Length: 222
Image (cartoon, rainbow, N blue to C red):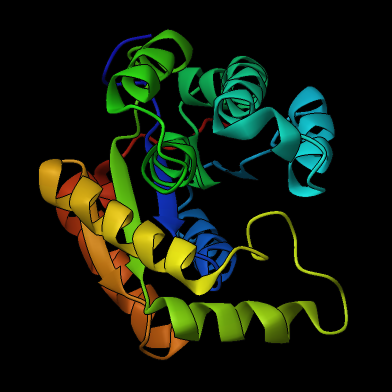
C-alpha cells in the first residue's frame, strides 16, 4: 500500500455526550459528497467479533476484571476491528471515520482507571503498532453537560458501564483527553462541542480540510 493510494484514518474522541456519533455521521456524509469511499465505524465494535466484546464490556461484565482486564478486552476487540474493517478499507483507498479508538483506552482505563502509562503505551504498541490515526478530533465538553446529554439520549434506558461512573471520573476523562491533544498537536485537534451541531460540524470540516486536503484525494474507480 503506497502513501498515495492509502485512504485516511480519522478518529473522534471525547467524553460521554460529546456528540461523537452525530459528528462522525456528518463527516461521513461530507466526505462522500466529494466522491470518496467512506467507512464509518466505532469502538468498541466495528467488526462481528469486536461487537460481541462490546456487549460484554458495556454491560459491565468485564468490570470485575478491573481496568487491566478491560484494557486487554478493548485491545482484543481493537485487533479484530483493525484486521477486519479498518486496514482493508485504508488499503483500498477508503477514508475511515471511527467513533473512538486507542485514545479512549488511554483516557478511560489509563488515566481514569489508574493504569500505569507504560502499561497502556505497551499495550497500544502491540495492538495498534504503526496504524495510528492520521487525525484525531477531540470533542470537548464539560462533564456535567455531557452526562446530561447522554441521559437525555438514552431516555428511560439504564446507563452503561462508563456512563454510570461518578462525575469526578468524567471530569478526569475530560482532562485526560485535553492532555492527549496537548501532547500530540500534530495528530489531534480540540473541537468545542458545546456549540450547535452545525457549528461543530463546520469546525471539524475546517480542520479536516486544512490537515488532510480531502478534495485532492484519489477517488475510487467505477
